Image (cartoon, rainbow, N blue to C red; front, side):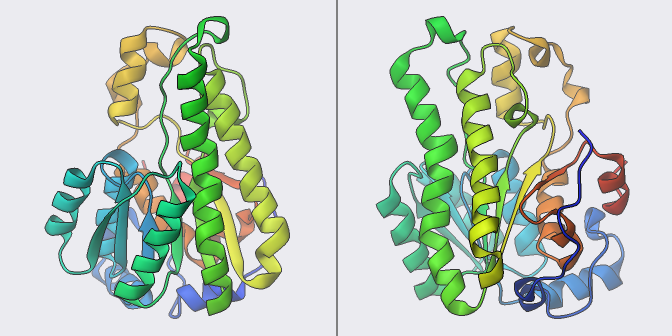
Length: 288
């Protein structure tokens, strides 16, 4: 899907987050000059990531930490995020959290502020693909549970984080979206509906809070080589399940894209989505 620029502005909160020079590429941080600038820009900034126990969330935790940010890792799998925080080091904090419950996200934000003094970036990443089932045969409770995680969880994250960000002068809210937000996929009614709703939440947040310093952007990564794709493959339903593993991009790509989206170059997509299927976006990020 071709990405359409929303407005070409540089928000005050983007300048607040990236206080140095604009970074045009995060690809592997091979250039030491780029690495140094990014380290300076994100040093002392705090990023909270939902669904951080594996996949895109875990990759994002490592990449943000690598460029100097404090990372607060949220997931229901406390053992996994604790191990990841231990791997990253003292600038990482694991917080057990169920995004379906607002109170746990509110508490996570409070813990984040107590430990690191503030919150600059929220990554809404937690999502599930189950139950893969035709709508007429889907289990109503499982269907509702997916909506609670994929959609209500995004709202809960925004609701907990945005007031704190506004009080501090601004912040960035990035939500991992999907092509499924924009078209029907067989046996994915829960996923399509929840991702479409989450995409609209990004638009609503931008509409209401851009003038108050909030940068809200979605990221549609395409198919990513994570456990979710293994579950999709096992289902044998719809064309996505027929893709080969080599067709999927590595989780590090969306992780690095999320870092880039914290900077003013991504302000062209405020209130909209950035697609990693877009050749121009891949060129900007030096992805093959």
